[in-house]
Length: 114
Length: 111
Image (cartoon, rainbow over all chains, first blue to last red; front, side, top):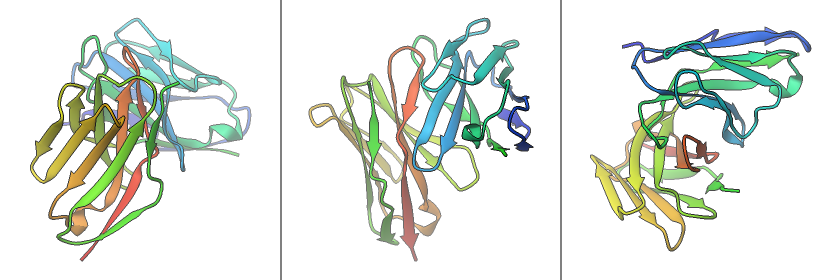
């Protein structure tokens, strides 16, 4: 079972470049999330999508945009990358209804901005 | 704002002993707390969810408690094994669809 698939797994960017992280889930989940993980700071929520067609800001949305392309796919875009966006990015999905529940994570995308 | 705090110091224990990890939260009690395991270079994996009205929950060698008076959850691994070595993350919902995480506690189990 594929679960949650993220691409690319690794990426190096120069300051000012743009890129999109892709995420797809094959579990028919309604909710999808993007987190970033930095040493000592845990996972921080960037954006989430409660259902197809909706997106909302999390704790640290500045510098990012998202698109919920369909029920399966949720992409994260960095329009003008900055060194502070060097991090490991995780996509997650959840089957739950009106409350967030168990999250299923991808394996992460490791981004370095020079 | 809601926060999740976990002991940032690594926990070192001997194989066969019980590991106990602590998670403290601020402000109002969440509807539930969750615990995840994360291995180096991998994504977190869900372990257990405990609801506000549940005092304790068990799954095989794992046990989680939820104390709304202390605003604390304890995560226990009994008969620990070297394969249990990992980082364990505590998470809470903050209303609606948002889930926030603590920084995690690294557990090392020595053979």
